[in-house]
Length: 69
Ligand code: SF4
Image (cartoon, rainbow, N blue to C red):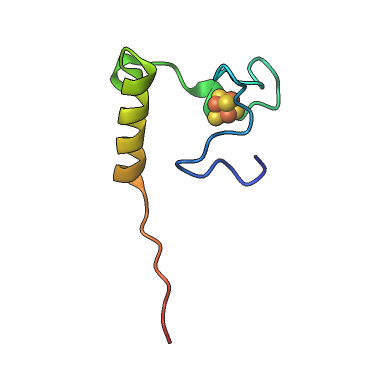
């Protein structure tokens, strides 16, 4: 994804089995390669991981506002 993956959007490199299509390839983003699975983030299931990641995205998001003139 040339401009990065927006929060809340599914990465276009995920395959139908939720595996990274770039795993092991040089074009895989450095941030993805540097991430190590951790129980604090991933929990014990996909559902727990989505819950924690959703909370992290919301807690670290920046509000975008439009100025009205
Ligand atoms: S590891 Fe990175 S590139 Fe691969 S599917 Fe996940 S977000 Fe996409």
